[in-house]
Image: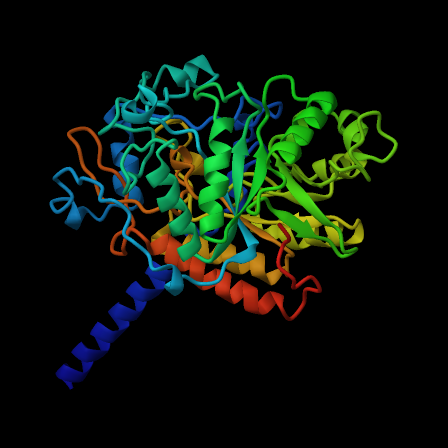
Length: 462
């Protein structure tokens, strides 16, 4: 009888422990709406407040966050020595999965190192100072000092690489292809323009297109909020992109329901520009209109707040994307709102492109922004987002991101690394390629499901 009672107690204890673990996991997967509050971090956004900027950090203020987030403390000893990132392993092209051209990933070519660029670019990004002096004074300032101290909570398998390195570009294309991704949305600034912490990157586009073509990938453009962006210079820049790159076989075009094959342009921070200005470019009667011209395309606006959907309609955009990998950060990035947004887009003949990410952590560059961190939970957060996207039957899905290391949204291979001041997060207990493998799994699932509801099954044209 005593034996039976002991056995019952053990079983009951294990059951209670399982229920407790499950509740904790579910809480981390989905943010508590009540705790988000009205602003829920929108101060980070331009106009809705200070700008998005991928940044970095130097001291060990991030150490506790990182340890709490994902580093298994039992394995810290194993991570104690500096890991020298290996070169990306070779992949047999014949063994790669077919690309899913309805799955897009945001790609950044703004990284640099002394070997290729004469200095570090973006890896040494400064820590972003909080706009409230009362909060800012509580956090260290400075810049990161690569190669061991970079502006990221994770460390790339390829090290603090240069986006100019042809072998790095090729490795990236190989990784994307292995994940069954079909299209990379390239972060783009006009020639001789750049983000405030980087340098011009338009000269890299030909190499990126060539390497993408080698792996049967397509390239579309993610137009960043360059200085003084308006209808006139947007017309000029769209013309530039199509004239210069439009004939390349890797240049992406989406075949619409009407049979047109049109280039696609994601427009980041589109809400900064007034609808009447966009209407000059995107409506048939606009003074700078691209409609029914050789420079027509599908222009996809970023939706942050719910009210933006009406501005997007008035502006003449062709669709909506949500970009942010933080469920609950904005109206658009909250999974629970995707069904309503999809319905709105369907009624107004717009594309709805939900953006899914594996997690989010930018405390190495915005140490005060812990409230928007989203734990990867060994891939569960990513899979919950992908599942939510598939449930609304979208025409396209975007992934944030392939390599936005500053905000910890990357699916690129990462490795364990520990220095005197920093313990980097990693993908253990899984392999460095884990998020590429998860992406492939869900890409194949999406491809099969999409065939049951979508009418445009053909591949994009070149």
